[in-house]
Image (cartoon, rainbow, N blue to C red; front, side):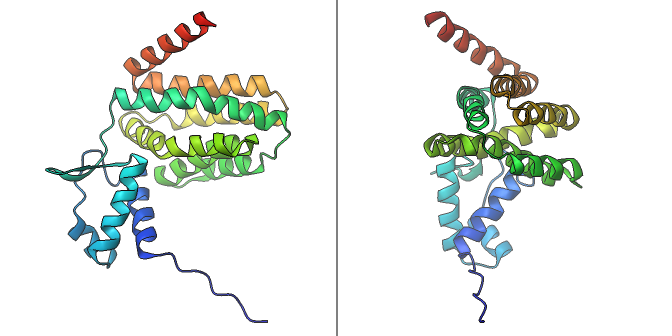
Length: 226
């Protein structure tokens, strides 16, 4: 029986994933210039796949392309945090609630939590934490809802990377993750959703107090209109 060769990712895809990994693990910091010629030399490719990769990353909101300043890693401020975390607070707890109510498997979330606890460095733990959250909302039964959350996932990770660099809160978040998963595994959909909402809100409150106040005010206004 002949083995099927493993597909080799395109140069553009490889460059894109590597640049994204460096941004989300803090190796490339907000505001840092991304020079095509330098990146091409690092990756051993021509400038074309680098240029295409940067265009894609600009579309996901991780980098900014400016006619005069060139390409830079996106800066993180309270406005960005407010936009990204407002979306997460609106959609992510609801997605988890639906996943629990439909009895979806949460084995992937459990495995991601185990990887985060055993992580040897902050980069590995950060990636595992991202997978934990995705494993909670992805089996919600609504592919569109999952894709919408995927679209803000990288930007949320960028906000988190900046916040963790300034004030690490890994242990606290790990405890909150365990509680969310416990409630979800027990079938408490509403309790798990509330714990997830509190987890997301407490993070943005610690990292960007101004953004948290604006989000809180907006949600109170919406509740008052219902």
